Every structure is written in structure tokens, then in C-alpha cells.
Image (cartoon, rainbow, N blue to C red; front, top):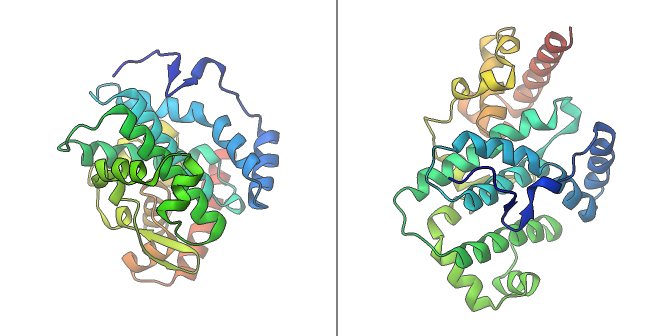
Length: 260
């Protein structure tokens, strides 16, 4: 994988903006009010985070453009699901989400047929647009709607999405309960995507030791494996309300330890 490139996926990485804490808070407040321009600015302002993550996969033979775009999907998911009330840094929440997306891509792409650059670009655009329209309209968009937004014929959209149907299938929703969507990818285990492989890089290992076994398990599932509170509740056999309470208590404990 080529490293040190200035331009990745048409993005001049040497000119990426760097958001200050105040700017991040202001943008996120606007995002929560449904401001799409603020969302785009926040995505652009965190692309350096994606770049830092894909460096961890320098030994991969995968094209750096592909890894960057997949990392951006993880970034977007992190932005759309981040809860500011938990008082956790966005980067702490986003890094494992980005890593998880890339690892799933590498796993699913390891035995797949190679797809052309142009087809992948079209498919990735369709993925971004589909997620944006779903959140905007609270329903799955039609192929016609996606094609109109991307500016490409519906036949080309279908062809491109079919070309990467294996990784694409990971984003298919299984069901939605109270606005919390369960995707196919959330039902796939990834034994390589464990806390021990990257937690030390986030300087949280000592803080994790301050938690009870149950709190440790919940934080690992929620923020290191990207599972929803509902999924965690089902996994460990307690209510979602209990998961929420234990999660908040654990985060308070970790925050107190890290800021002491």
C-alpha cells in the first residue's frame, strides 16, 4: 500500500482542515439540529483521523484509496451514532469504528473478484448517498432516488453495487427498533477485532482496569466492537436501561481516572 501520498481519492491530504475543540462542539450542535453542511464540515475536519488509522494497515496489499473510502464510511457511522452526552472524545469513539470497517472490508475482500476503480467509486458514492437519504427521509431510498442524487444512471448504480455485493451486503439493515438499526455486519463476529489489539494505542488500558468485570465487558462491546446498547443487552442478558446506566457509570469512572 502506497504511503505518503498527498492526494488520496481526489483529496489533497496536505490541505485537510484541523478542527479546534470549540469548532467541533459548535458543528456537532448544528449536526444534531439536522444541518447537513455542518455534517460535511465535520466529516472533512476528521479525515486526518482516517489517514492515521489506515497507516496501521500499511502491510496490507489493498489499494490505499479503497482503505481511505472504507475508513470514511466508518467515520460517517461514528458521527451519525456519537452521543455527546457520554463525555467521551469523538476520536476515542471513532477510531475503533473506523478500524472495524477496514478489518471487515479486508476480511470480505480477501477472496473476492477484483473490481475496477471506477465501479468501486460509483458504488461508494451510492453507499454514502443511500445512508444520507435514509437518515434524511427515515426510509430506505429507491435506486432511482440514489441515481438522481449521485447523477448517474440507475443501471450504472445497480451494476456498480452488484460488483461489490459482498462488502455491500454488510450494510443491509436487518431490522430497526426505536431508531436503533441492526445491520448484517453487527451479526458477524470478528475474532481479530479485539480490544487487546489496539486499546494500548488509545491510552485507555489503565482506565479500563478501574472498571468492574460487567462494566469492562459493556465498554468493550459498545466502543471497541461497535455494538448497540440493545445488542449488548441481548448478549449479556440484562435490559437496555441497565446497559445504559452501567455504561455511563463506567465512562464516568474512566474519565475521572484519565483527568485526575
